[in-house]
Length: 132
Image 1: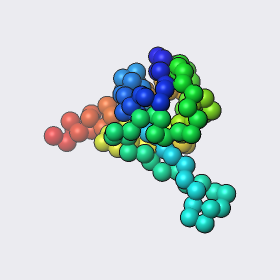
Image 2: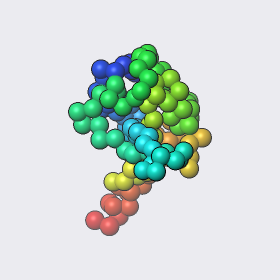
Image 3: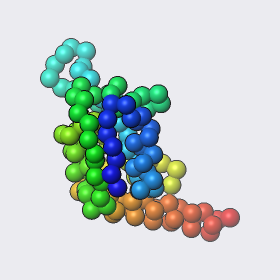
Image 4: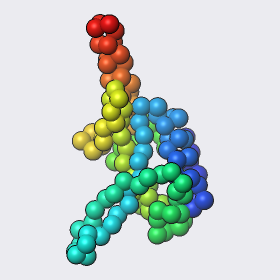
């Protein structure tokens, strides 16, 4: 899949396109903010995507296309978003009704992550049927 990245794109549209290809995964956008005492450390804050465009989130405004393959790792995807488009993102995997950050499994491919989310959701549904 290829996603067009430019300042006028809505963040929720990028999320939708990604989740269409990987239904058990989602991307969330973050922004870096310096701490109050302006030291070197930065904090990452989740961005509410409603009514936000790509250009609202980044300092560098280069556009282009992001080619995402199922063989990319989470680590590669997140790195590519930052290096090429100044967009800090995190990938989350569905686990029942929860969304889990994939930082502990960031070396897994998007395909592996998506399949694991699918299996987790199916297992939860199977357990549910046993008790009803």
